[in-house]
Image (cartoon, rainbow, N blue to C red; front, side, top):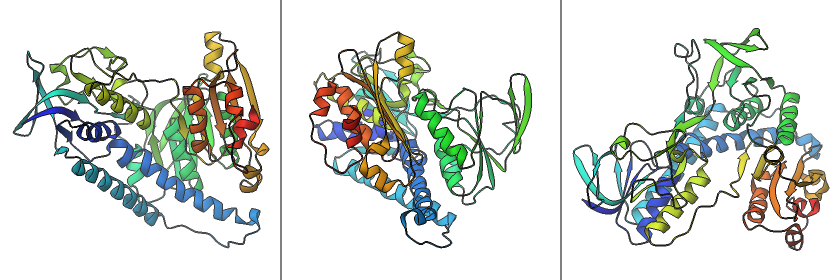
Length: 447
């Protein structure tokens, strides 16, 4: 069985590459050992956002009196919330299967193992007893949860995002180890559902590399809602629901019914014969050039496996670039404007440079910053809500960064991302006619 393109991994990078390659006239085989859609669709991006939307609806109803609307004794059915999440995932995975079928992609449900690369470049892959040959290989194996060597963790029935999404019972209390994007989104969801939430973070701020000022504002908001934060704390042991932490030489114990581990993810590089090709490594993944080529000719890597940007939308763009290169279109991947979004309530989003990055580089910049309350639409829809729109300009007034706190930051960041990617000047963005009243006007108002 010979193909123009073989793809290992059916997540955002893999299924995007498969669809694009097949649509471009290339015979394509896609290997996926679990479920099409990868972590993003099955136990990441989509299911978490589905749960968070249920939480947002519940929050909205609870605060209905602020909008002169009466809603007495609002309640939720947790098993049904989980069931709805499963329904959404099922619908979307079926959509991907349909796309593969419509484009003539051969989908192999099973583990793939790279067996070798011949002198003419042909790559041999086995799955079960079947053997496949391909002129080009795309490695899109994604990432998996980092499990740190914390004493007692192995003996504890802790949650990762997978178990948290499968649970049909709501814990009364939850200790989240890791205050990054995943940790904060789960903190948001369970806090809305009435769970007592504790967030332990080794750094001195939540949300890692995101804008510090906005991250701190979001933390203050969730602290008001009852989430307890332990910043600069190192977890030294876990014993059931007891999490031992240390800061400045002092030890204390945080208790929770459940423990959720969310300290990050790392690329999947083992279990599929990668050592047969021995591509040049980068960090804990595979090194690629601007066309997503590895050091091995006709072997490409896209998505989390590159250990650069562990985001689904980055993976999709990388897959498009890789397939374009196979088709003879030399379009290089740009990482200039990769948006980052945290789907808490309120949302926080950023693209391009942060103040912290520019300060570390010693690069001069100016900030244009105003409260979201400068938008009439925001005020109308967010009673007593606050937020910030921050735009970062280079010395020549080129927009090089944007950071937003407030709904719907996840949608507005697209506008800012276009400005950053295209190197727009402040005057160029200001000249665009924004519809009124919209929250998006805040970008123009800030300038």
